[in-house]
Image (cartoon, rainbow, N blue to C red; front, top):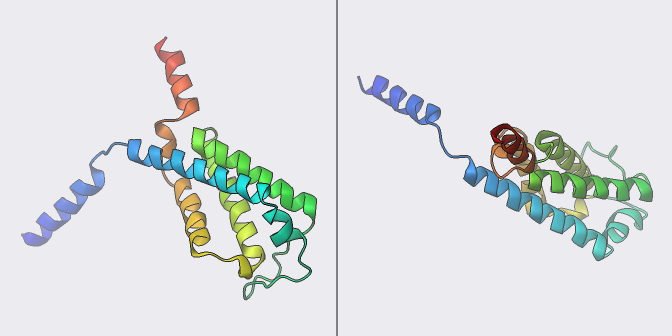
Length: 152
C-alpha cells in the first residue's frame, strides 16, 4: 500500500501545473547576462587576445579538431552569440536562439582549455537545458504581441 501511495505522490508532483514566470524570469536574466558578457569580451579586446593573437592553443583531449579558424570567423561567432542572447532575453525565436547561443558559446569555450572557467561550463549547460523548457511562454515579446493581436 505504501508503494502505491509513493507512486501516486510522485505522479501528482510530476503532473501538477506550475507557473512559468520564474523560468521566464531566469530566461530574461540569463539572456541579459550573456549579452553583457559578450559585449564585455569585445570591449576589453579579449577576443583578439584570447582567440586570434595566440600562435598556439591547448586543446582538450580528443578535441584538437576545434580550432579558432580566422579573425572574421571568431568575430562572427561573437556576433551570433550577442544576437542569440538578445533572442533568449526577449523570447524571440527562443529555441533557435538557445541552440545558436549554446553552439557558439560552447565552441568558443572549447577552443583553448587555458581559458576554462567552471562557470563557462555552467553557461553551456544552462543554454542547452533552456532548449528543453517552455521558458518563452511568459515575458516573451513575440508571445505577448501574438496574444494582443488575438485579444484585440
